[in-house]
Structure formats: C-alpha cells, structure tokens
Image 1 (cartoon, rainbow, N blue to C red):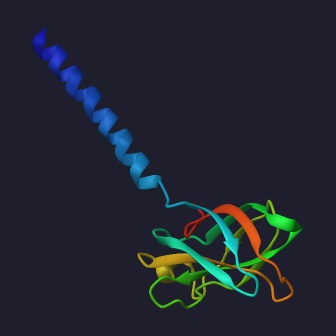
Image 2 (image 1 turned 135 degrees about the horizontal axis):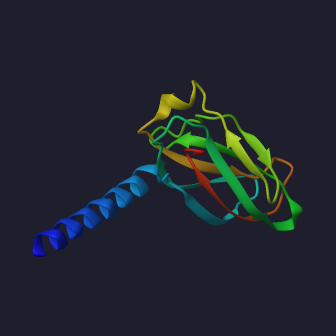
Length: 135
C-alpha cells in the first residue's frame, strides 16, 4: 500500500513540475508603463530581453488630451532604433517589425521609446504595455 501511495505521489509531483516548466517556458516578458511624455521629447521605458522570433507588440490603454504618440523599440545598450517608428492613438495595439527580421535581436535587451509628435506642444500622459515578443 505504501509503495502505491509513494508512486502516485511521485507521479503527481512530476505532472505538477511539468506544468510549471511549460508555463515558465511559454511566458513572454511584458512590461506596463504609466508615463508623462515631455513636450518636444520622448521617454524610454525599462529594459526587457527579447526571447522569441516574433515582432514586438505595443498596446496603448490611454493617451491624455486625445493626442497621438510615436513609438519604436530601441536596443537598450546602444540606444539605436531597431524597429520603425509608428504613430498610435488611445486604445491601439500595434506590432512593430524589427529591422533585419525578428530573429536579429534575440537575447538582446530592448526598451520602448515613446515620443510626442513635433506638433504637440504640451506634456502627454500615456498608459499601456509592451513586449519585445508578440507571442
């Protein structure tokens, strides 16, 4: 009886361990932001490491004053843009294609850059989330 219980217990622990492992492997890095973008300027968010072979994704929840923002992904160490710059409004979700293909920056630290257009002469509040990997 003890050996059946012991084998069952080990089997249950093994299945639970596999479930945790699969969850951790399939998770992608996602960061939120709640920022005030300066007039005639930009901000960079915290760093996330690109892990997969997909485009980046940026989901904006809100932008103050019904304004638009420009967004791109930068290489965190060099500060160079590694995607094009995209314009977005409140509630938009966009995928940002990497220059050189989505596999070119795997295992590199990235940051999201958010800027106000040149015609915006006020500070702009923005909230949302982003990931260097869309999936």
